[in-house]
Length: 76
Image (cartoon, rainbow, N blue to C red):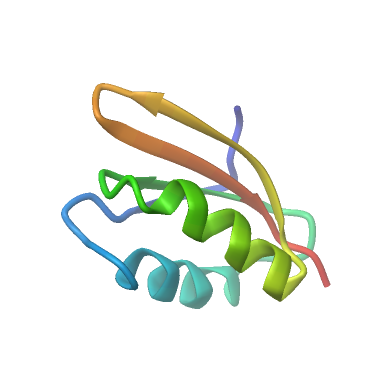
């Protein structure tokens, strides 16, 4: 999946990937996609829940070599 920006959260654990994602999303324009890379498997449930709460769209989660690539589209 193609992203406009990439955020490296490898080595960070809950709640830091969500905190960093929230900060990074403020810098994106509506409709842009952020790729969050993390190795904390909690992100598989945390990010979709955060997206529902904030109105952003979780486009998908891909797992590769123990890392999770989460794609989030910014909504207004």
